[in-house]
Image (cartoon, rainbow, N blue to C red; front, side, top):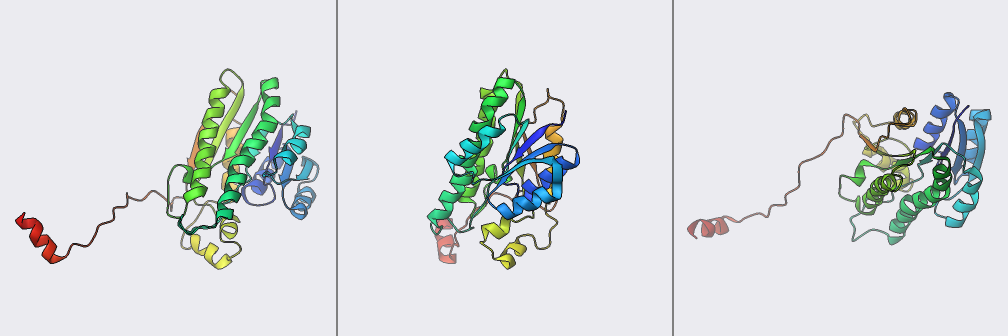
Length: 259
């Protein structure tokens, strides 16, 4: 019997790529997203694989609980909806951007998980797959609240595993590094030139790469739980620790040497 996956944020990027990957393998899809026109396009493209497509803003607690209660029988919940806004230092950031990231990346994951998880526990079967980020483990300038929200997703995933001890419900956190999608266009609020510079001279991860990883972990034997999987393009790695050094004037050096 075909399995069913519920994908949030399915109208673009990782979500759309995952929908296509799972549909190609005969999975049934329940898709949610904020853009109705995109959802209709996905339904037209993927045909009978789409069981339902619902306009949903994961920041709306009541809407999430009301909408997803109809789909409590899913085998996999892919908490994909999320975003980054801005790259300014913390003292210059727009507080509205911070709140939008918290409401989407944290509260949205909480609401969707809480709506779907009871059914999985009752059936003693299921898989929660969260789209985190390498930014949840590794800081960078301007990552402030975005990285913090993804650190929440990482720890939330671990704590779900602890809560589910003894149950046959899996939890996985997928943690991509630099990936080319609408992510940077959203982050820079439509400034496509600035968004393109993020990937200049590199070969970043593609949405299809993330979809391949999600499909892989979802289709492992049921006794295997991939707790977390971090991936980066070969062009990305970690930098050394930053050390700020003050310039020492020659006269000051002489004083130090005499003391």
